Image (cartoon, rainbow, N blue to C red; front, side):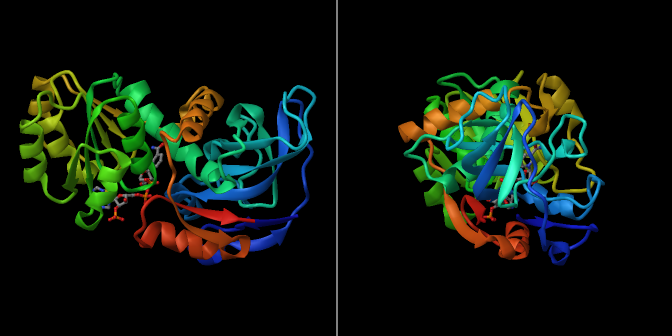
Length: 325
Ligand SMILES: NC(=O)c1ccc[n+]([C@@H]2O[C@H](COP(=O)([O-])OP(=O)(O)OC[C@H]3O[C@@H](n4cnc5c(N)ncnc54)[C@H](OP(=O)(O)O)[C@@H]3O)[C@@H](O)[C@H]2O)c1
């Protein structure tokens, strides 16, 4: 089968279209014909060698497709539509994930998968896994967001952000969100009650001051840029959940303020999630009900993976990019 691989770390040019053997599934795995594979910024960071993986490597975590072979204990049947996300941190083998998803077929453990409703496109299924699990972990698992609560979500038109805004809105939360000033209408369309410029910290402080309750949860993917305002606006006893830094060594600018408010600062990695399949199942229900829509901004052929990697880092778009092998 055809798959994208890299044999050395480097820029997008190290991605090559290779012919690789098709694997057979173990008892708790299935083989999936990949109809769409989601592209995430971490795929590009990994390609640059940030995590020092064993090479050669097929990149990609997210997938949607059709089951073509089943392990004896998989619980799936050939022909089932599935979607999921593979924890690439463990592709070296420690938890059994064997391949990334930029390939015509991939063998995946079933606890990384869920059924894909007939009404949901493969592109949507491939786009939702990693970002949906991240949004869920940040808002619910670590943030403890309750129905009717209040949250602040930075970058609410990005891959993670646009799903987080919709999840919070579906919970009936008051959603304050930030984005580029040209994309504030998109934030409102995703369900934000207050849409603000991500570069205007004063406007954010003023908007939060005017709320009945400050946010119990602040969801930040660029902690280096926003740490100070996050701590200023989060409710006493609240949580700032952090998925990225933006600066090499993000610092807490006012530790005294954070201490004074009993703020929890919680960095986390989506792939430490214990039950990916359960969260995927909830995301599938939300997609099928229409409460969640994943924006697929652009689609690429398998041999255009390098262009997709350039775009996911350098270009601006609302939502997600997918590769369609
Ligand atoms: N820890 C984890 O488990 C985990 C999981 C998923 C993602 N991440 C990380 O989280 C980050 C976001 O991921 P993603 O998939 O959502 O990326 P993405 O789709 O590229 O979205 C990033 C968003 O950030 C916005 N942005 C740019 N400058 C900003 C600023 N100063 N303040 C706030 N927002 C700003 C961008 O808006 P414009 O393009 O409109 O300017 C874009 O909408 C990446 O660094 C990724 O590696 C970590």
